[in-house]
Amino acid sequence: MNRQIVVELQAIQRDLAAMAHRIEQGQDCLAVVRLGSSVRRALGRISLTLLATHLREQVTAALTCPDPDCRAHQVGQLAETYQTLIRLLCPTCRREWPVLAKCEVDDDSNSSCHHQ
Image (cartoon, rainbow, N blue to C red; front, side, top):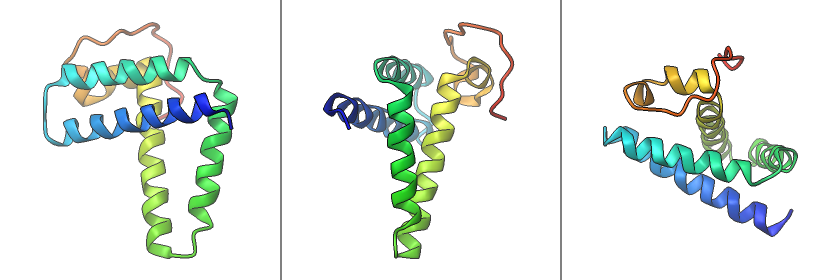
């Protein structure tokens, strides 16, 4: 996989972890929105095909882990990451996400959400 994509994905994972921490702590929603914007910009810099390939590899690795506890933990983390990414990428999800609903979020369309 392209080195640049790995770097971008690592940055995305760091931002998602920081968002999750801030949300859990009930911190300022503006900081969460800024991190979400950072993630969307990073996603815009990488090919969605390569991102899908990378995520598929992560899922395969998680599902083939011989340790059931580790496997469950990895799959849970991946599911949470996907859910967060979908909420950030879908304008409807962003608008309806409780932590972002009270903030000014840059909605770029009023299209209906297909991720519910």
